[in-house]
Length: 441
Image (cartoon, rainbow, N blue to C red):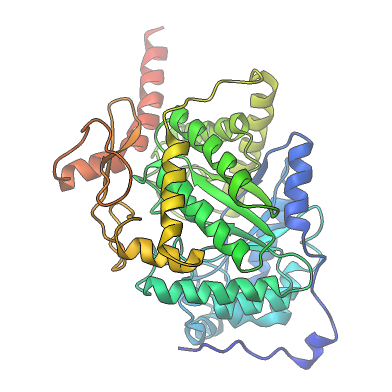
């Protein structure tokens, strides 16, 4: 295990790669003002040439796009020696090992590709990202993402207090840089599915407050598409309202993720799911969308498949803006009030946001359903009702109310698998029903 960031070569100090920071949020804001939805892939390759080809292809998309460099699994757990050996052997890693490649190599990756009209975000998944953040700061990265809760509970065995302390230090690493580095909370994507909207919103806002508390001034809050378009529309409105109320004077925007759970197996079903997420993003006023491709159910997508998904999403966004009536009513079922209650009560558990998060999880006051991390109570349960709405069936010790007793009782392996496959069946069934109807005409 290696925890030290390699020293920069002497030549690198004479050839600065640090860009004019702040351009990530500037690009998103400018695109939104122009009526364009920013679309973004999740893409990472170990080889610098392949990664650069991917960035260049995304930059050439017909639409407002930002680049992604997804980091490999070795780097996420700070095993940089293994990443270096894999590079030496020519192994096919599942992402770009920033620390192992070093500053000069990563600088070559970005130079001439990243710019004011094409900022690049590094996405990782690390509960202890100090090595990575130090490397990103030195190379002049536009943006990264994660959070003390959202990159600890789902992805690691690191104790939450340790992850929270590490993220406080990492936020200061970014905040101390000349210019502005953008940081996105992953709190709205906990486990990808079966987490009711109020908790997703509360975690994303709390992480945003944590970032602000530690000096960050450019933030995005996230939400992952779930099982009901109407519920998701209300959730995004609540997220935006709470960000306006609680993030103060920081520059912030909202990012939506196309469904993070079990994906449809048919290409048409997958495109229908992506289409629904695009229309949801436009209707809700969301500024940025992380897309998924038609092959998510089977394998990691190619560069070309990522580009196809991005261009499809950009075209659907244009179509939705041309036909969506202004001022559509947003459902009001109490998501805002429930999320605000979770946030407000959580803050009573500590003198700062970090200690409050640790204290709230220790008491089960925050509790992510079906999450097996040792610092998560795992008493809460959620269920999908017959209308497709995701509801609390048992909130555990959280200050929220179960929804009319729906879904109460033990969750069996069969019922959990049934819920996990809900969207897969829904969108693939639309395709099969449509094909059957065409056969009858």
